[in-house]
Length: 349
Image (tube, rainbow, N blue to C red):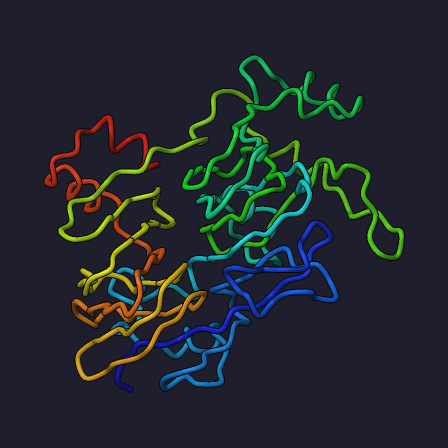
């Protein structure tokens, strides 16, 4: 089966804190009957809508993909490795935390046994938007429990005002929440393990509160200094376009590209690439294949496809997500002239 550029159809996920219009990113998704909070772009239940895996789910297709599709780094990985999504909050998400791999493997085998480290890139934000990521210095378990009991937990968090274009890294074990007035692009380990600590006393349409997971959450919260928070982008060397490295770790790497002229996508046989088009339209040319892309679409670029070219009909911005060998990746950044201190602010262990 010859590897091809392959489009993935998103799944639109209702959430109690979601919105009823996803415009302008998805202008056809307006005046919806229920609030949509997340758009899963690489969920294993997302459908393949082009190429040899047409009609199959991404999970089914992944199991059939050979190394030429996956890349040498991922040839023996059983499950699709990264979940990419958009988040559309009209209200605060719950204050929550995610377990790391060690805890998830020991206690959550039935849910896949994988922890959840994630990053956020803010697609748009308006005045007043903010996120809470990590606890203030000196916050121990006793203070945390006191804040939880008194419903003053937010006062113990590091608060970050949010602007369009900001990026945040959120390691497993870091309590956090996302507020309203923004649209967020998220890349994470493929895991849906979330332990809610506080949900602002909300109830669903039936009047029922959502389940909290305080005991498990307290087992995984990492009190003390955090390694995440706001992350400065690294502007990568490129001619005729703006290319930024947003954040990276051993689980994923995320980049942002902006251009208005034909642009070559430098690829690597170690890994596939996921392209998410935020704006623009045009064509992707790869070997003997030429496909059209539009705003909001998600494309899987097999690892073996060498240097596909993106030919914009309109100015285009896409986000790129993939999995990389971190030692090689950091070595390449050093070769490009970045110093170790700058790399350490954007690339995490």
